[in-house]
Image (cartoon, rainbow, N blue to C red; front, top):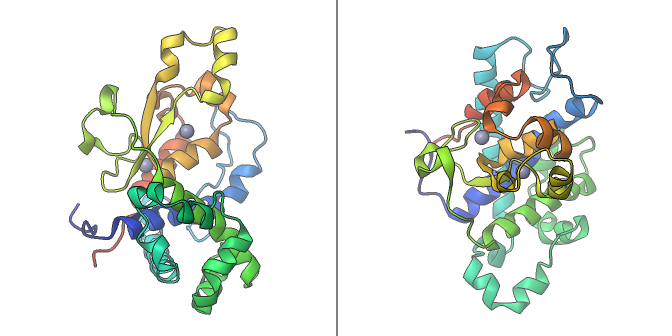
Length: 268
Ligand SMILES: [Zn+2]
Ligand SMILES: [Zn+2]
């Protein structure tokens, strides 16, 4: 892992992580949304899950596309981060907890209008053009940029101010194992309830799982975590994809994980 930057501010790193999730989500969303029914068999036309700019041929090209995309995300993240107010750029959990002022100034979730007031006055207009060129937003205008950045900022504040997660469990106990899907060990991880909490009652009532299975989690990077929730509904996750191995038995998941593993940042 020589080529990632370990000395980056945790705030900028978190911001980039939240932003990359939103950008990759947007670029893959339109194609996954069109699938109405989940199939467990391979279809003749593979759904395209990679960003629009990714060539359809396989492996090596994906690598290059992932590198380009990482560079693009890095650029947008750095520029947009610079435009944030100082108290957001230096946000920490202790500062947040101690300051009702911060908590009301950045009351969550942050909306598009909050975002446009916070970032847009100082954001380089070239950012909007780049986002349009990459197909992330349709119109090169302020509203589209604030709509894109509102959930990013909300995730940023939420992540930085969250209670630290419980210790890892099971096969991924060792911290250095990284994301259980893509294997990246230099990005922050989130935990995913393999049987989503939203369907716990139903899962018990219908006897899908014993009560003790409900607490099983997988440690996933933000990209893979969001992908998993785009890939399948809560109920589908609970019924068919309640282990990492079951997720990895799906070609679409493997393909995304392979793709995510190549999204790495250039060393500064
Ligand atoms: Zn991952
Ligand atoms: Zn989850």
